Length: 243
Image (cartoon, rainbow, N blue to C red; front, side, top):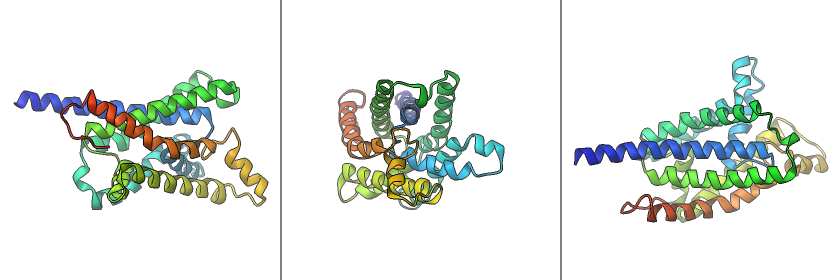
């Protein structure tokens, strides 16, 4: 029994790491495609824009990683108050691993000379779609591993207690996207004229919130649910579904 329990724990740790890695890879692919990030990453990158103003060269250089870490630590506060039973090793993996993984993949794309400005349109579409599939699968895998949840998923659970996971995820996504939009457009780079505002949001080179962000807000939750059901029938047979 102990060996089985230990083996199950190792499995959950590995799947939590894998889920977090896939989520981070998806976020990095969205950034590379530059059509707009997923709501969670968008808010993290919005915080990164604030950190870019720092006189500390190290913080400014790795502002993306620090921005995601800041977001997770902020969301950890309500999680600590209302969802503390969900805190486990997987939570730490998500909070600290996410920032490192995004920075790692961003560095890989940069070393390979991959930038949205020198990529053909079809390649950017492929990166965006790939990021979507990878990240939604990563979220479902991490949540189904059930070894603690990340702060962002904790917010989903808090908002889903009355309307279900689908509603909770959409509400969380919309809230984060709006806050990211306010920070990146209105506070850090204010545009007075409506044409400039719409160019900022819907331009194909948008790096924070773009048209693809709206697509992700609508489609991420259904796909995460779909992946969760598939995982429940295959990898997590006999376990309770968390999505």
